[in-house]
Image (cartoon, rainbow, N blue to C red; front, top):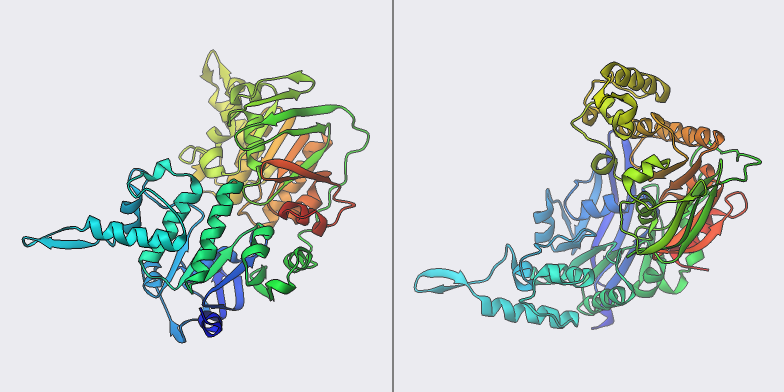
Amino acid sequence: MSSNNVKEEILCTQNLGKEFNGVWVLNGINIDLKKGEVHSIVGENGAGKSTFIKILSGVYAPSEGEIVINGQKVKFNNVRESEQLGIGTVHQEINLIPFFNVMENIFIGIELEKNVMGINILDKKKMAEKAEEVLDILGVELDLNKCIYKLDTSMQRIVQASKLLVYNHDVIIFDEPTTALDHSERRRLLEVIMNLKKQDLGIIFISHNIEEVLEISDRITVFRDGKNMGTMLKEEATLKKIVSKMIGHKSYSDFKRVPVQGKHKVIFEVKDLNTEKLKGINFKIYEGEVIGIAGIMGAGKTEIAKAIFGIDPVESGEFYINGERYEPQPIKSIKRGIALIPEERQEQGLVLNMDVKKNISLAYLDQWSRANVIDLEAEKNNAEKLIEYLKIKTTGPLQIVKYLSGGNQQKVVIGRWLSGDFSLGIFDESTNGIDVKTKEDIYHQIDELAHKGKGIIFISSFLPELINVTDRIIVMKDGKVVGEFDPKRNTEAEIMIAMLGGN
């Protein structure tokens, strides 16, 4: 491969921007990609990476700016048109048919045919030859007749990449491809990406794992608040430089938690917790304390919440609430005084076709029951009080919850637990996808609960809010605790470096 090819530009964007309801989530993005190059894009959650990728993939149309491919300005209205112009994406979510084999998944939608006695039939021999050729380019040996569900996650992603090579794409985008992979699977996938680079393809690589980014990139661009904060060559990039550009000097909110003083009782303790994902987790939470759990996507944050509440199976470990040991199971956890606001409120936290009143009363139905019959008036009165207390914007307790905004849906989930009493509250990504005012309301609610003596676990992918809301921050990486920080003493950069794999 000649040096001229390396320098040849395949794709660039000129002043690219995207606006939703008057808010610019992407603004003035100028970025280019060359043949035989891995160009990585990094940034915090909400920095604009996903929006940028969706524009290049044809999911969104840009609100302003241009996309140029091989020197020609282009426009595409959907994913297929983007693919026809040479851009393919290996998404974070596996998009394969589990019970089809490898070859069937590679060629689905572009099957090769041959004519036999005037009838078109599948040319399985030719497809197998082409698939083997693609896998050879990737440096992978794989049984083409093996069903997808029998492959590990890294191999499934490699099959996704194989589909794109059959399409003869010039640009391949990898969106968080190593999330949830173990070390050996990760190594295999990174080697495949480097083999693609040798084929003169342009690779856009999105990852929270800065170690990987520094290893395989030729250039690294940092996004922050929807803007391009600068591009670095691999030789000049360091973890500290990248983190500095990612976080800047922004202040997330005016809310600053004042810690509860003089509380020494242990509310909750976990000893040597091990699950399929988590390894050797130990920590305590004291009365009136808010601890944060930080980590990049796939670090194990949500798995801690699910293990404590009893949703995920536990291989080993001990759990104590108010000094008494318990076996984590959802019903038992509720009775022992544990509340969970789950990460996916619509899928895990709400019954969307039920009204606000019923969603609020679900966790503590025995409070509203007499001889197994629900006292509808008492249930309605409780919902009305919580609607007023939490300032839930709704037509009333009988409104169907799916018609509420995301922030008001989240308040309904919180209201459910305030209907009863709990000692430990777990808030898992509870401010995701909601407006700034509602976030502030949730911060104040957490603070108020702590001042009433409850222990709070606050899980978030967004570091600035963890620093403002918590008393201690536990950092997770690859299912393990890699550090504990005092948000009043440690800087955002120090905590983020631990999250991203530095010392």
